[in-house]
Image 1 (cartoon, rainbow, N blue to C red):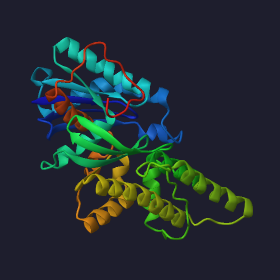
Image 2 (cartoon, rainbow, N blue to C red; image 1 turned 90 degrees about the horizontal axis):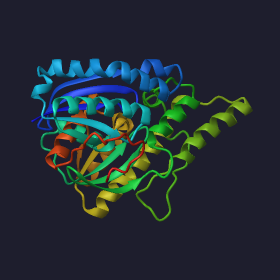
Image 3 (cartoon, rainbow, N blue to C red; image 1 turned 90 degrees about the vertical axis):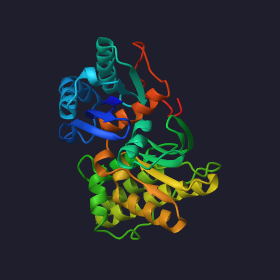
Length: 335
């Protein structure tokens, strides 16, 4: 079964063709990173316009590289939630047009579900149930994946997402967008014990995260040093920050795995590319005997292949939509 996946939730216009939810035949992406870099982050209006300009060509390229036509496609999957509403609308509108004109099933896909599904493309042996840590610029969730289309949120951030915290801390240190990548790179040159940073906990919710205080602590340390005429060792601060975030993400995840009896942990989302998180989770899982899966770096960011992969399982589960499908800016993974 061939699924065409379309992704436009943020600043990547992407389309891909995937066979049976596991085999990538094509994966075309048009990135806007360079354009948004001069603004220090994604500008929603610009992102929407660029999606509108790129989407037709990106879908054509995905079909061409896969060596198929729309007639060969069995379903059209599209990210409809969550994300930037204007950006989502471009992908949803285009997918609806394709579905209407071809008579193919229209498959609505939740963005976080598709990030989890990226692992199915890289690991043929991976099957639910498992516990997944989904970390990105907008989300930090610990999710029990009960089946391909059944999910339970075990823990989540109460304020900033881990990726957002990375980007804002990096911006405060004068690093270019996307800041998380630059911070990760510089952290390798620093001492992770040089700065003691807060490790916020959510009382009564042992698996939930809170990152806003950590972000503020980094910003305040930089401001205080500037006011006193002191120099901050940015490499040390990056290393200390990354060590703290990793400790929080890994600690809550392995605690949840222990308490619910899970023996398989999966990483997903853009921040799953972070070297500190990968190393920390690998060490923790090795110590406890858990199996660990993570997507290759090429599938950590937003892409159409992960949408097509999850779309395959949504279609098998009987989930399709009509022309009433609309984009939704915020939506739980369970809906």
